[in-house]
Image 1 (cartoon, rainbow, N blue to C red):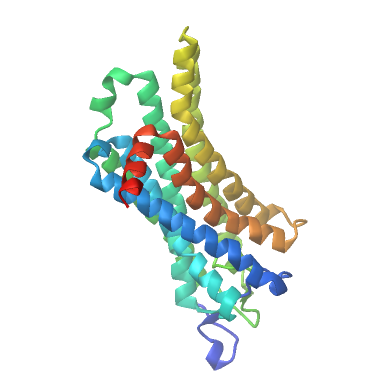
Image 2: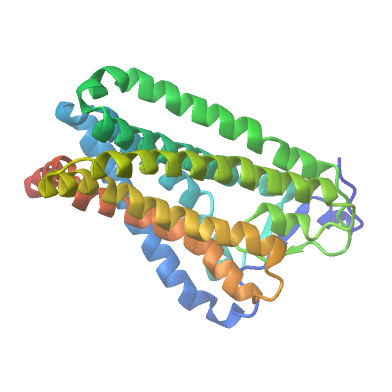
Length: 312
């Protein structure tokens, strides 16, 4: 276990500093944090409820949307409540065990989220390029199996992250300049050799994000090729409309994720408050907007949600 050169009362505690440089504005910053979180919970819980109640929505596409909703709830819930405690009550202490646990779940859920986006891209590829075999290729059972594979991959790849941190010594500096226990933010406060930790962090980024973006790019390359072969403009429009929601969700997820992951290692000229705010955008905005995007762009889901709202 790591050794800490602190006072006895501090042996098992880190301090989450919130957003350095913006301490005076923490109360104001908490307003969009809490608002986004509440909207995220309401939207994603609504999607889960409506899909679970409606037999006509028990299809692969909606099962994937439910998986995405669960990861959205998870990633925001592992971050926002503690961040609000920092902003409202100045409750900045977090135990080492609590920090490593939070870190594991945040990164595991993020990896699972990425896996779901890959499965969604595959779903769109089959729906457009091989529609006659869609029902036989993508059954609910097969989607559940692919989801389980994504979850297993996330756990196996992320589990070494907190385990590698156990071996590091942490000296007098136990202040984490962040609102949550982000991996590299914790690595930076260690006074030991962090070469292995930094290397593994990059491996995670390139294995998960690099591989997933490659697979998604391949799927959409094949989709574009298939669409260009269609002579009808109406068919073009219909095919592309089925992908619009997924493309929006991907851009919202991967853009801040890549920015956060890479600037921790290479963006030394970027102000800390800007970096941390954008890192929080990654866990706040996509979970809030995803159910709205799918609710607006997916007619079946939109109609069922409206039906339940009208019953209230």
